[in-house]
Length: 289
Length: 299
Image 1 (tube, chains in turn red, yellow):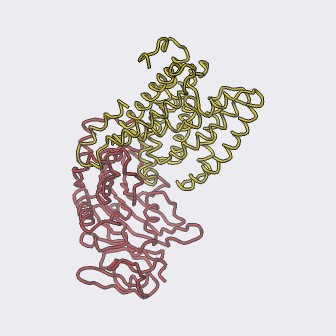
Image 2: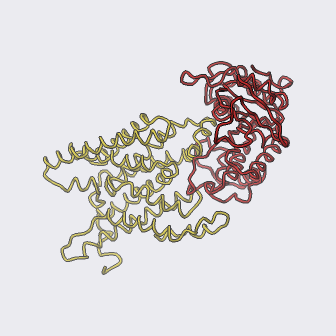
Image 3: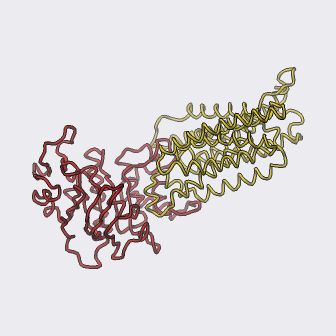
């Protein structure tokens, strides 16, 4: 089942997914996923590992063609590998899950952010005062000025995430997609990143879609949730989606939602597997078994 | 060593050719080498060198200048590697390995047949280990032109290459044709390897490609500076190597000089070791490593 998107006036949405289905190698990864994200909205894309969150982000980015359904960006259909960069304005900023960099790589944090301006173009970047100011401003926005001149490969995971967020927002996107930016971060880094993103959403009216396997670090800031499990998704306000009946229908098996000390724990019908993180937001198997 | 510059050093034609070609090779390999190390494709560079050996040996067999053999084999090898080794880095390594074994086998055959026909072993030595003093003046313009073309390709693609090394997915999302760019880069790498093979031999060619780059990455944290430092290191090693090789004719009474390739490779190694000595720990949040940047120029 799919809960239709939040109440949004037409023309106000940055992103709309309509009945997106994806099959990869004969396996159904996503079925009939629909939701919307509007300006300034901070939306969590939640689901257990392997539920298809990354695939969904790749569909939005135009890297993965859906087998059915369509993606509307700013009200217009997204052409394959396309619209996000048509007409000079870059609609989507993207923060990938992991960077492929060695500590020895000669790239400073500010070089990475600078690549956000025009790293997709040919030619040599010429240093200029305006460029430097733009980079500094983006680094300030994510509170990363301190390590602007450090090699990016030597930064901690949380610091790298901030640099990549600066890389993404320097081009002033309307929509920001982040793939598990909180994975493997300590609690303080998690909170710091969530705060930075919430401020970007608030102040620059950027629509933020952030994937995570644990919704708890996001709870304080997210206005809406897209919950992916068993290849399907439920979308809506957090209190509309994170309910036992909605998630039970999604997983196709009995699911309970516990609220303990301000945290939400989703428990599937079977006992959690050994090795599952204690208090994780989603303890169910991706296939809903 | 009796003189800093032996009498006649700069009036010798072969030495002038060696210095000219050596400089072009060192700069090309130095710049492209930095991107090779950043992209984690040192292994591809090494494999292209092996494939180039086959081409050089084949050229020797049919009596063509070895550079054309290196170049043709390198470019074809790069194309095959990219075509088999679809997307994944690991897949690429495996595919590269397969091409490699076959190529070296063919090189052995060509060199064997070649020496049977012409009954000289000198040529195989030159193909495998190079000799800057026997570069044919006829090929010099072609060598310089290929170096410039390879450098131009890399300069035009530098930003895109950096972005794609950071995250291929991110680059693709921003409309970069990641595979085509990777292919163009591999072609430039093949040219660099061929040039390097002419200068110091096919087997040693990666020394000029990876050594100066690895040294540069240790002493600077900016991509542009790393390329400059790498090119400088390579050039310094080449010039000094030529000087020492020329001088070595006088080291013993036999009048036999040592191969210039040996000196260049040894100097590259020394520069690399020096970069270890000078680089301060992991000083990441201060300017300490700025000081270390200078190191290279002297090496």
